[in-house]
Amino acid sequence: MFKKIILAAIATASLSHADTTLSGAGASFPAPVYQKWTYDYSQANANTTVTYQSVGSGAGINQIKSGTVDFAGSDSPLTLEAQQEAELLQFPMLTGGVVVIVNLPGVKDGQLKLSRKVLSDIYLGNITKWSHPAIKACNPGMRIPGMKISVVRRADSSGTSFIFTNYLSKISSEWKEEVGQGSSVKWPVGQGGNKNPGVCNAVKTIMGAIGYTEYTYAVEAKIPVAQLENNSGKYITPTPATFAASAASADWSKSKGFYMELTNIPGDKAWPITAVTYILLRNDTPAATRAELKKYFMWCYTQGAKSASELHYIPLPASVVAEVEPKL
Image 1: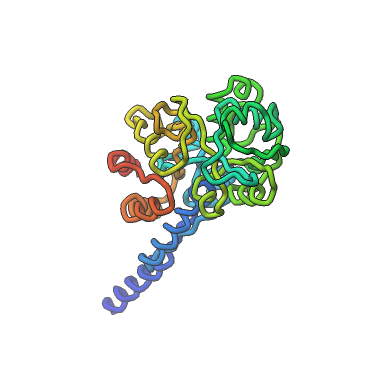
Image 2 (image 1 turned 60 degrees about the vertical axis):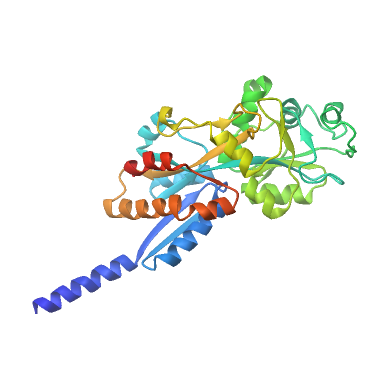
């Protein structure tokens, strides 16, 4: 009889373990690699299923606060005070780049150059034609169509928008004073696209369009990206190497609650709109669930690093992972 009870208990425990599901939702910025990770981890760990819904950073933050998911993804970092107020734990997962994409006849990938003032003036609505003298000055000798500029931006509450507007606020006093930074702002001009894929689709279908998106989406959609003038006055092409050049300057030991901004970082080879994407957990997550989440995220940091690199993201250094692990 005792043996039967033990066997039944083991069977029940196995069934319970087999039914472990970890649900996440949030930022579309890291969604390509998160979806790869959730699939690979679920395949390698038959007893655990991990899911992730790309709904935007704002929606992800709302869901983790309400407790409808086990973890949230966000590119809009919370300050330590905001984390404490919401009783959340925030930690970094990856570094990546926000790029400017364009749809101009005859203009190839990485060919167009945009200065800091030109980029901010386009999104402020001060420059409305591709034939504007300021754009021509950035691209001497280049034939640029004299068509209208169709500005595309995010329609939803977006961490990618936070990164982009954070950058514009640093390079343009006019933008900082009139618009500011945030996941959702009052855009002076432009039409909205839903999440990163929506922005890419709009730019790809509208001749003369300009938009911003996470680098992997631009690569996968084969949309030309622009070179941008960085903090050192150099025109830089977005690549994992130039993202890494920005990320290398991050001093995580001085960050509070892992809050970090990597926009407009000094350095000749630094991409100007580099960012960290984060995970948020509730402080009241049950111990058993927290243990499974830790196993999953540590797998992402280690075995998932190769997939991250292949999808054009920059894995976190081992030294940063070592700071994150005890927090989990």
